[in-house]
Image (tube, rainbow, N blue to C red; front, side, top):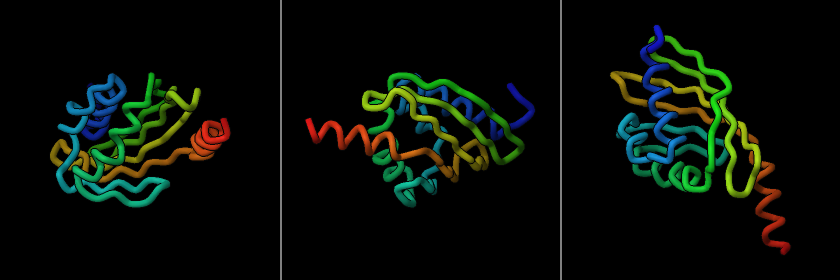
Length: 123
């Protein structure tokens, strides 16, 4: 446990999805979550499930690089190994209210995924 309620929630959420227990991870997500990602805005838990679930399916492992938080906000940075990409670092700024994640801003480099996709199409 940390001194940050938001960070405690976010770390539990991250531990769940990085262990491929996406359904448990979703228990930390508010029904009206808003997620801002490089691909655009995603609104609502069902849309978030459709957006993030496929990533969890191709993810092989995740390693936490840094995590900070206060009462309502946490910032995490991690690196993932996925089926198409050997290193896919990402960062998330997450807002938590009443123990639920209400907003996620995800930052990651899409270029390695696009290159892997192009290479797969070329072969």
